[in-house]
Amino acid sequence: MNDTHRDEARRLRVDPGLSLSELMKHFGVGSATLTDWLRGVPPPDWTRRPNAKDDLRAQALELREQGWSVNDLATKLGVAKSTAYLWVKHIPLDPNAERAREKQEHAALMIAGRWEEHRRERDRSQADIHAIAAEDVGELTDRELLMVGAAIYWCEGAKSKPWRRLDRLTFINSDAGLLRLFLRFLALCGRDKDSVHYRVHIHETADAEAAGDWWARELEVSRERFQRPTIKRHVPNTRRMNAGADYHGCLVITVPQSRELYWRVEGVMAALTRLR
Picture 1 (tube, helix red, strand yellow):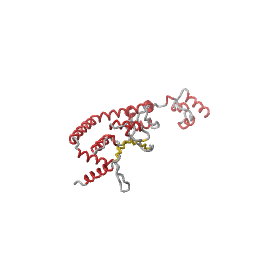
Picture 2 (cartoon, rainbow, N blue to C red):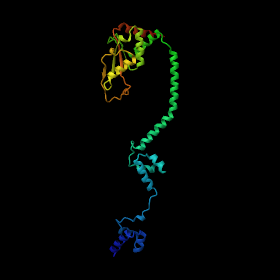
Picture 3 (cartoon, rainbow, N blue to C red):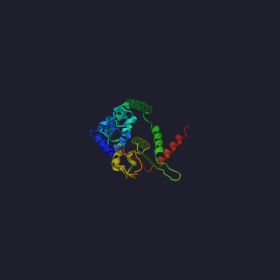
Picture 4 (tube, helix red, strand yellow):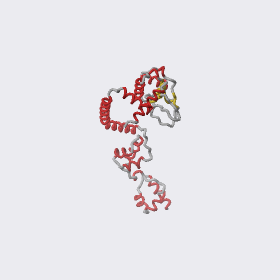
């Protein structure tokens, strides 16, 4: 008899889909017996209580696939951040998704707008100070140019050592303005632009010939005075910032037969360093 009741209970649970209370009342059995009879039989759909947040969760999953962050999801759907996180934690956030790119672009615009006025004010202040400094300097006298030229050479030029005698001016730099100033110093000392040699010192990943042309134009010197460039081997592990179209390497200016001029630079620097 029990097997017959069991089979009948399982049939009624599926069609017409009676509830547990209805089946217990129909067969006059307790919940334990009925649970045993219905093992493996899923409850009818109508008995399942819908979750009020099922639609929100589905929407959260869809938006997460589009690149929405947990914070954005919580704000958009009106749920706690912890809830939004539990819903979508199994879906990694794609930094290249359209939503992520839009947020990055928006953040960049906000930052740019916030700092634009600050930058303009900074640039105005810098230009004012540059103008005041230019008035303070005025025109260099020969004496001032002699001291300045000797000083920049002593900072950036090759110097004679007790273990390596070098009585010749060799100046290297990547700043075109400083190189122009050094050429003015040489002219004051009787050595014009066409009496010295030039050599580009540059990494192998750059265009040495184009760099030579650029330096010749920038300093208004003869390209024929340029010697074969020195090429520096590229080290891939080194993060170089001096790269791109604006990279022209360094320029070496060598002054032949300049022993006495080198001694003069030594004398000027000795006099300057003895000043009280």
